[in-house]
Image 1 (cartoon, helix red, strand yellow):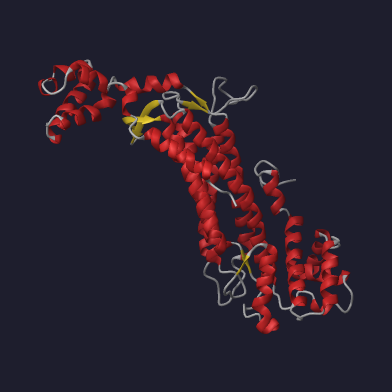
Image 2: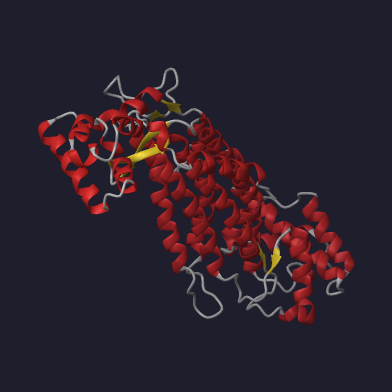
Length: 451
């Protein structure tokens, strides 16, 4: 019986779960062993026949997770069990050359990099897809005026499409950050016990370079027994940052789905139940799921930072928690991306409610533009501000007509005609450079290259 929701299939896409399952992890580590043996034979560090024997055993899939687990029961060491499993299958003359010059974390850390390498391919595709969907929405709603809110209050007019453009470009920036960080994160380390490559001597670095190229990783410049954990912290931070953007989107959806606002809504499929007790409920559960998961990820970031400081050339105080952190963060961020793609693809936009909400303040949302019009006529900013503020605040108390009050005010009527005032109260006149920005952002997404 599954204990964790990831194991039970509640969270995690099939593609990502496949990368982090036990069998695949062993395949990655065996691939490292094979690549090292091949490189060492090429540089005359081990016999060619030994290298071929090791590669043959690995390629034929003769090492299984069950074999390794049985051995681990006895020796209580997973990497040693893997090496022993190979040894049991290979020729007698090959055995001295298995795992030659390596230590456990050469396999562990390099296979982690391989998992991250393949995981990034999946996540980058999803990030780009989400960015594209968001910008398509931005283009669709670029001319739709809506309420722009600050501090939870109506502030000014915004293009509804600008919300999506903001989100879409941030997803592109995540792609840029991930690409730029790969040379620091996707590392190959095969330098042995304390990072000197002592058993391989002057050829140790060359072995590592050959292996790194074979595995499509970067050869680390210097290491102790392990890859510096700053690199893992950077990777986890990237994931947490992506999830934070997803949370930002989810919170806006949740707020705009409030009954009082109702400008957007998650798709509610036929047969779905919003509440076990209240039949009318349509809850934004997918957006809420993202908000929930990101809290878990932030906690993992703190743990990864605590792993940076280890004793001397290494200790094991990082090992156990990293078995959770790297798979969990990667699987959950990929899950969140998949969820958000589905949310945005099926998002319901209520145009009528968006227009109604502009009129909730009976025109006071246009006060910024009235003030600016007066300033352009030569009225000082402070006087214009105080005049409009007084009229606006009296609306709360007296419920008098806002536009009529503006037109009756001597300062305003002596500087602005009724026609000029009326034009200010047309929402479409206040989109500013929104359309230009949205179209530019859309071009950026279309021109983005995913490596």
